[in-house]
Length: 125
Image (cartoon, rainbow, N blue to C red):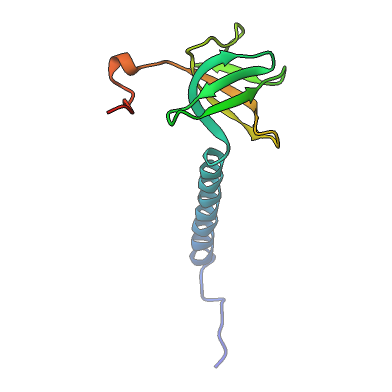
């Protein structure tokens, strides 16, 4: 007995194929977002300003040397910060670790220190 596909409507094939393609697309978008945040980013407080950048102290008391240049973007909220960083600023740094152990910053986000409001978890407890 020979199978015939002439009796199967095209809609019965197209709908599952479209659903499959949308599912694959959603998977890849989710994977891209996940991997983006698994990259090199560092959170902490600016404790020293240097000629080539600054020193960042994280919650585990690690100090990291962050190098900046003219291509480094500094943002505070949606605005690009032109005044630079100050000691005590809480920041998130996105960048790559170099062979020297320094972090080459691509993007720095200044975030509001909200410990006084009780919105940040106090690690000392």
